[in-house]
Amino acid sequence: MNVAWTRVAQGHLRAIHDYIAADSPRHAQRVVDHITRRTKSLELMPRLGAEVPEYGDESIREILYRSYRIIYRILPERIDVVAVIHGARLMPGEPP
Image (cartoon, rainbow, N blue to C red; front, top):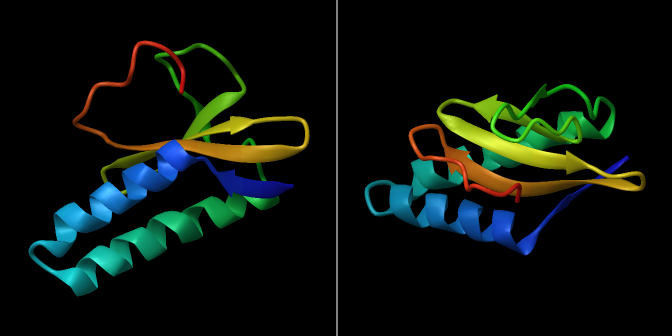
């Protein structure tokens, strides 16, 4: 199954990069690389992550990388990464 990144999730990833890059561009790129690599495992194991408890929808799941929650939705034809949110932030009220 293919993993696709939504524009919102891509924006989150850019914001994470930019925030970290203010102190260390090299570290920022490493974090982004690790987050994107983490989603590759979903191609073979889409149910690898846990259900996002805030939403109670088994098609909306998350995997973790350090303090980041990588939120994705399982669709019949693909997996959409819909958000990358720091664990200290509140989740939006509606599913992404």
